[in-house]
Amino acid sequence: MSVQPAMPKCWHKESKPHKFCPGCGHGLVLKALGEAIDELGIQDKVVFGCDIGCSLLAWDFFDVDTVQTHHGRTTPVITGIKRANPEVLGVAYMGDGGGYAIGAQHLVSAATRNERITVILVNNTQYGMTGGQMAPTTLPGQKTETSPYGRDVQATGYPTQGPEMVAAITSEGAYVARGTVANVKQLKKFIKKALENQMAGNGFSFVEALSTCPTNWRTNAAETWKFIQEEMPKFFKVGEIKAPGPREEEG
Picture 1 (tube, one colour):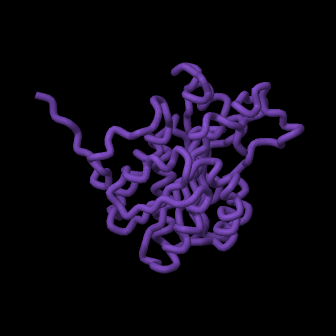
Picture 2 (cartoon, helix red, strand yellow; picture 1 turned 120 degrees about the vertical axis):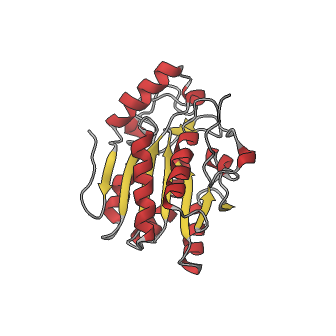
């Protein structure tokens, strides 16, 4: 007789399995977040906000207070909730479009003000929900629905270095890191440290998670893994970028 492993306390049993496409990395990012919430014992304090895009499919993923926002507005909504009730642990969850395109102003403003919230941004180099258009994080030469010949950096610029930007504009006490679903153990450690930084009241906490989208990348399993392990880290360095105390880096 087999024994099924216990489901983490903060997960909604009715919403499993998740609703993301096969091979999507969102499920792994959310698993890392859920395990971090359980290990810290903060389920009753978390308010989880999710953006429009693929991230909206997480609206019923956790058994915590949850709000779904307009596209790009998750950061200010969670900021408002945190300011209204400082005891809350606010988590803003979004994709690269929600954070680096339509929501860029809100991300920059919250980081500059050093708001005591945690932002988790999933970077899969394109707009997954709407069919795979070019995003701020699309790699040079990468083909998408709106860059069929590959991204021309002379015309569109280079991929947005989100964590590096946030690290540059935040005050002392902020926590900034970039993880990857290719190393979920390390990603969970970064998310957990971001939440702990908020719990300590230090400042803005930001974690970018490199993620997969084989549906829109049009890649098989081997090609998907090669892209996230070899191609994405060329432009998006994994590791802690800003942290109170010693930082963990990965080449």
